[in-house]
Length: 159
Image (cartoon, rainbow, N blue to C red):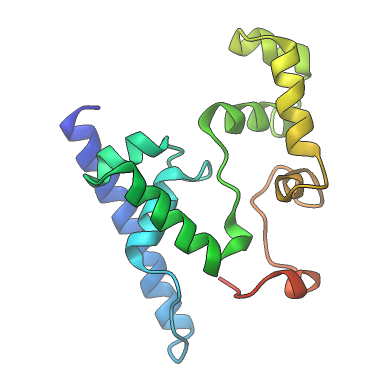
């Protein structure tokens, strides 16, 4: 990855995280923030709704080891499980084409030049309601998950 690209991605992720942090402090001044800015930057670099980088690319952008990225994401998962899972880039692309573009499995396979069996397997994995990833295809299809009051028993902390 080019040095200029790394620097611009790091700058943008840092700015997004800091503005989210400032907005949270403005809206809830008495509350304690459980997610550090560094954890949020690592999360934004990896999550498909933001930069969608692989673990090694996110580590390269931050200038740390891949283990550090995994550690930061795992700590964030403990305090904010509602913003997970983080989909790998290829799976996120298949999800986007399937849900947002309403493409069929065969069309996705042709578009991405991969086997329709592979696409079907990933769509089925995403759709499986027994996993937390299945949440992506329920009531909020085509959008990021948002807080609903029925989630209270399943969420330790609202983020």
